[in-house]
Image (spheres, helix red, strand yellow):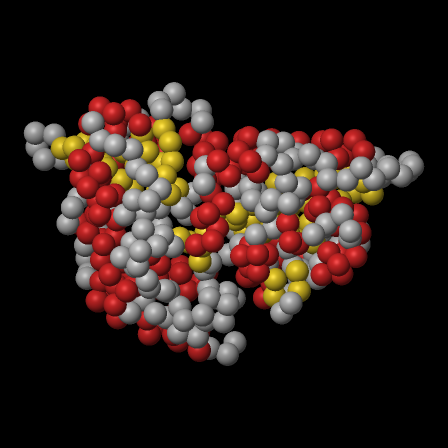
Length: 400
């Protein structure tokens, strides 16, 4: 059986079909299973209608979706748990998952998996299952995975400049060459069209052979001061400050427009992000396509990743019913379409954020502020990592 792999774009292409033909039970009052999730307007509509066919076969269970904004999602769910008003099922992003797992609020799904002949964890990519497994316990079932591996490009801009499209076996040097050729300035020297933009600085660290920490699953030491990590950060900075083919954060603020608008309006030739951008891009009229993130000095393309899974809360009083709903929500369909894009291969090279309960706090308080100074040319790579590493190590060493 093909591995289950469907990124966020999957939700915009296919409606998830029912995963079971189990006869419906007669019931005058269906049991209500509540599902908390986030998403934009398009995703909300798709998710809330995703198990329509399954629901018709299971009138004994009513699935009630509860949309919660992504901002502050984890804290809002934890507050509902504490207040005794939690849903039965929650959507959890792969990095947000660390917070829920650390709070020990998620039901161990191992017994459900082992006892359900209609379900097999082997149908999923092992990398994704591993992320949602803690101490040998399945705590969430993957809905999608979303490597930061996509370089979207405007084919019209490439054609006008007479530049070949990116190939999946390209390198950093190839990317830089194309970005330079596609960057334009006006008579005053102001940049009117950027060659590339990518927020995923982690990719450059990983693809240079570096790492953020010594062990993703049990981090004890920050490694951003290694030669490889610094090489990746330096190249990322050079795209902004030396070659001027990528806008810095401050430049974006001054432009007063989002990257999506820049890309759709022809002011950006290449955009490095994740597959979840696709539903929005499909509404654009200009021709575009996507290539994989290029290989770095290590000879490989290593990328960060996102993704989402569904978990059942320990507080749920309808765990068996919730399990049936989780199976329906994660049922695969349309894998072949995604496989055509080569995205399956990207999963083999993903690196997750460190599994640490305070990692999001570490990013917000330490890493992001220092990197912003770096990317805006306020300090060097050496100065930046010299500030970041000891602070991160202090967090990692704390016992609380």
